[in-house]
Image (cartoon, rainbow, N blue to C red):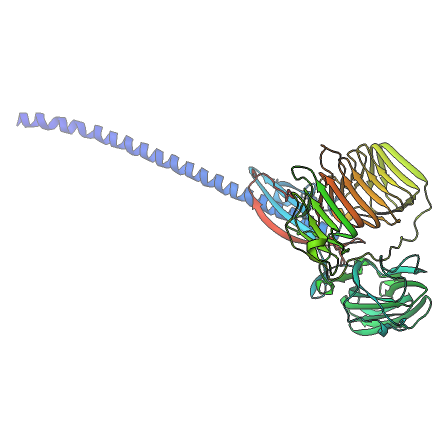
Length: 589
């Protein structure tokens, strides 16, 4: 028995120790569980906080982007930061802490808006691409201005509108921003450049927009006859042969877009044509502005060219090929030379990334000559109808001439219309255009030695030049960043005018020289001269490293606005990681 007790007593003494050990282990496990639970709860809390911050940042970025798009659509600086389409600081008082801003940058595709917002440790960026809106022409889309078709009347001198073969293939066509041509002698200014002095007709089609419902009056003033149809209703009858004479008509129109068809003929003598209106909100007679005129694709005889020349095009680069015509953002440029002779288009050591057309009826095999290392990526053919310029009419009401002006070493602001005998910019001079400005230079425009013409946000410049244009020595016109070329429209209207673009010059503009030549000759072994926009002229020469980027806005030949008011279309909208490199559309060949 004793021995048995000796064997059992140690077991009895060990039982409390084992229980203690178990309790310790349990407490350790409980501590681990509690700690794990606490850590897990902390992690869930952190995750929830990050989700809230990310939501706040995303909400703020979207709000800022919406505000910037609204500014673009209305053309207003809603936040007062001095620029339309950017937001210096997004108001986040209701979100308790997040901050954000929207940056605007211009590219050849349109306006890139990058909205960035930060909340705590979360940062969100949304990027959108806004492109200029086309006019909402009723049930379709449209472009500013009207399509003009021109008809030569062969045979008897016309005495009425119905003597013009309106259903025949036009002899030429163009796009006009508005109908405003005061009477002049036909021999001094043909109605369309290259057209006859007499015996012709012109038809203008598209749509007209009225802002308010009510009775609208329309007036044509013409020499000779004219007639106006709105929605197939004959509103104004001003037919027959006569000197400059006005006739009116009226009809009730609902607000919005309406079909317009204006016809005009000229027999002999002086000629002119005006189209005016008045109605609710327009108490006095005024020329219908381009902002209220638009046309759809169905009104166009064929797609308009980006580069239109009447006589000859020569393109010769250097080895390796460094002379280019290319399209912006996937656009296929169209080069049209109205002439039909052999070799009117000559391309060597150069590349055209688009279509090349000779005049109507030309044989592309002989009219378009491609030499060594020359290439055309698109089609080669002949145009069905030549694209021409309408008659050039200088704007009325410009101030008296300020004489010959030279600027150098400094910044000079032009915020109102002006007229000068000549304009010379040199030695780092910067001319800043503010607002919508029209200028008339009766002599030459010269930029050299890093001089530049720049535009403030939202500004535009229409420049009529009677002399020549010379750019050299790293000069620039509207070339900062990826400025919109349609904001600068330059017209050299004198016979034999020359636009000489040399050196390392940069230009983004719409340039028309209907009676003269465009010469692009960069300095040898220098950086290339670059032109972005639309070119219209008589003859054009590209050499060395000249580069032309043709824009899809080639149809905007004159005037400002988008036909139906400013607008924008959202093409891309997506969330991007904050560490992703910003990439903007490029135009490298």
